[in-house]
Amino acid sequence: MPIRDLMVYVIDSFHLSCSDEGESINQIVGEVIKVLSSDVMPDLEREIPIDDPFPTGEQVPEAAPDSPPPLFGIETRLKQLEEKLDFECKDTLTIGVVGMPGIGKTTLTSMLYEKWQHDFLRCVFLHDVRKMWKDCMMDRSIFIEELLKDDNVNQEVADFSPESLKALLLSKKSLVVLDNVSDKKQIEVLLGESDWIKRGSRIFITTSDRSVIEGMVDDTYEVLRLTGRDSFEYFSYFAFSGKLCPPVRTFMNLSRLFADYAKGNPLALKILGKELNGKDKTHWEEKLSKLMQSPNKTIQDVLRVSYDELGLSHKDVFLDVACFFRSGDEYYVRCLVESCDTEAIDTVSEIKDLASKFLINISGGRVEMHDLLYTFGKELGSQGSRRLWNHKAVVGALKNRVVR
Image 1 (cartoon, rainbow, N blue to C red):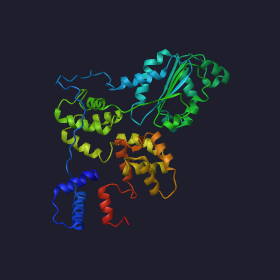
Image 2: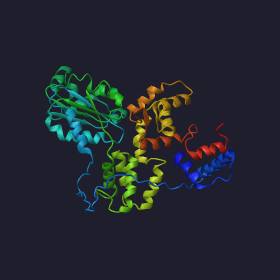
Image 3: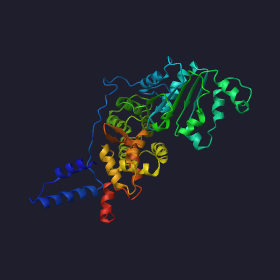
Image 4: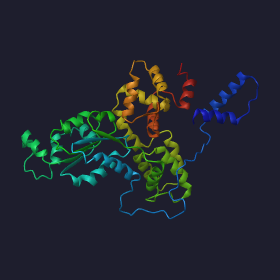
């Protein structure tokens, strides 16, 4: 519970029995400790204002059994990304597609690839470059073989002389997608100097780290979160067996709360919806309560990939922001993080690095953190004794005289 709500609750819950200011403060502190030490917290219900997609009571449509799930909001995004193709430009264009983990970068570029691949004579969609790199399977010859798979080449790529291979590649325009790139070196290994790519080709690179593509792309498209209504409908599709909104009004506000928690992240909406499908209201309420403290395991695993690639000092700053400064003035956050570190660090640079990796957001001079990353960070932060952000941990530490 936010400390402001807690204080209002405490003050409204009892009457001061003395006129002495010091004694009144002691009474208030005593009440706060009682509430913090109690497992029973006041129920603060909130309504999430998302328009009902079917306000007139019309019948809720269901998807055909074998049809793929609808991708709410994808049409607008796809149209925006298609504009980056810019076929009037005769040069080769490299486009970066960026956004936080689970936001739909791969889904979006897959749809674009399926729609436009027939306009190019050579096409390749290289899935999960990060994993290929980690598994030591990054081989440019495999990439080239994929590009030439429809050319009926009768010899291995390794058997070509560099000059003849380059001439062959330069004979046709290509559509290339490098999916889930996590390091500049991966792009360098696969594309080299790009002097073998025929003029007029299009290359798309998806990544959760904007710094990876700096200086290597001609344009960038950021995949933004779904709108409130699209989030609600997408979650409902998976939570209610293909229906576009909850068939039972009992679940309406709970659905809105889950959609609000996911903050427009399609992967989280899908995972949570599937997990809650067929469960009763009590299970939904218990799950929502747990999510406020710890993220879903599958979602946590996705987020952990980006976190594990951070350096030690970046991890410390990320956890400090998650545990103490989820939303705050950028200068204020920077000053406090610097004051907490025993070693001198470039906090300005580190906060900007976290923003480029979409682990935090800087907007209007404020540092903000997505709800999914916030609960993920709090979970990690609670595993050590350095950060005491949980009220029970603070009370316990004070009682045990851990904090001096």
